Amino acid sequence: MPSTIIPCLRYRDAKAAIRFLCGAFGFSEHAVYTDDNDISIVVHAQLTYGDGMVMLGSVIPGTEFAEHIVQPDQIGGRETQCPCVTVADIKAHYEHAKAYGATIVEDYEEKEYGGAAYSARDPEGRLWYFGSYDPWATPA
Image (cartoon, rainbow, N blue to C red; front, side, top):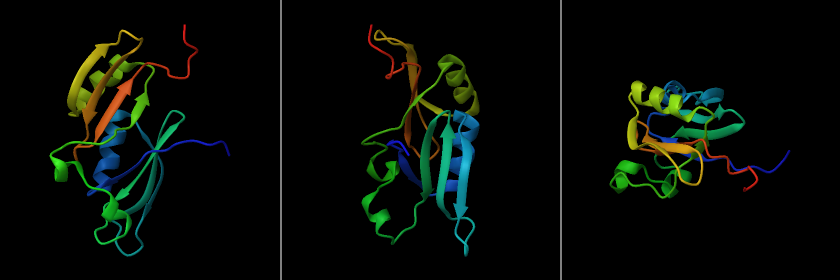
């Protein structure tokens, strides 16, 4: 298996987050595993977008991992990072997310270094950046 980096996020309502991320931003469910004793808890989920993936799960208070992560509303809506998703038709993606009700943080903008981009928040305040710039392309 080749090396890769996959962002991992936590949500208080992971099932609602999955519905939103798929509906607003075009992700697809690759795998969703729920707790055997409480199906409202997502132990682990994998969502894909093209060749990319994010993993997510429910915030489970009292677990060791939960002690290392805070939710955006716990720190004034700020983030220390955000997933960046490369999108082929960024203008259509932006219009769809906006129509779906995503909170647009930075409007669609053509970038001087190439491509275009916008950023949005999901219902739990996580920041997402979407753009058409291809970082793998050979510089001109």
